[in-house]
Image 1 (cartoon, rainbow, N blue to C red):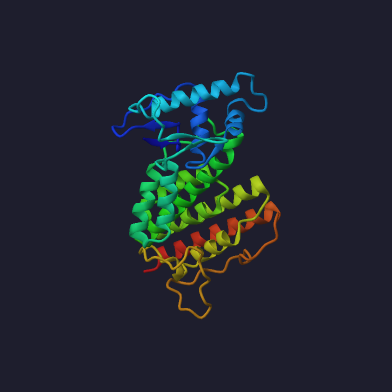
Image 2: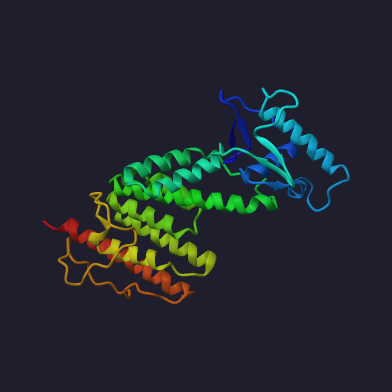
Length: 317
């Protein structure tokens, strides 16, 4: 039996058929056990998951009835009075003796990808992300027992999305990740690493102006929603995109050694005509909650500088 919690709760047999799990309370019992696969969950914890702080007098007999129903649904071929192999009684509660859970498989694949070169890592990450069907523990994501697990899985998914983007960039396929990152930054607008990856992907496809626009949009969102300036990674990436830093791999797809860009040495030979002087001061470490007017002025000056350089290159014979 395969259990799925990366979306609506499901249990499917070897043929792909769905087990009849019953109503909300037996489903709650199963979901609570799946949040700790292979671990003992006490009877008190299961009763609290079903009824909260005020279980009725019939709560314990009802729990026993739900467990019996789940055992029949999960092991339809088990003989009467024989010991269950999946949903096991063990004082002071029950455990689900399986690791055939999509969330467990997802975590294993993401961990495995972290030890692989880009091409193998990409295969692991795409398989891991394909397991997702929606919000984890979708029916129960607001329950106290589920909140921490939902948060952990959601964060792990974003890490997998970011690692997949890095793998595609390392394989010189920036165009394959732009659409995904655009959707992810819309869904997670305060996650700076996603904005950095989107800007870098756009830059490596030759869309410098769009990359700078993405970074400015991220800065505005951080300022408006958190009252914060962009972090050092966003600021350094904007500087390097403005100056076509070699560390970014340009738009030939050459993988950079790391996502975080490094400043171009002052003595290095520029690859393109030097940018015209800008009236805006150079980007540097800034105090938090810098006045909004100054941020807008610097963003506007950067945009004017980019357009001026583009016009100069276009007019060259």
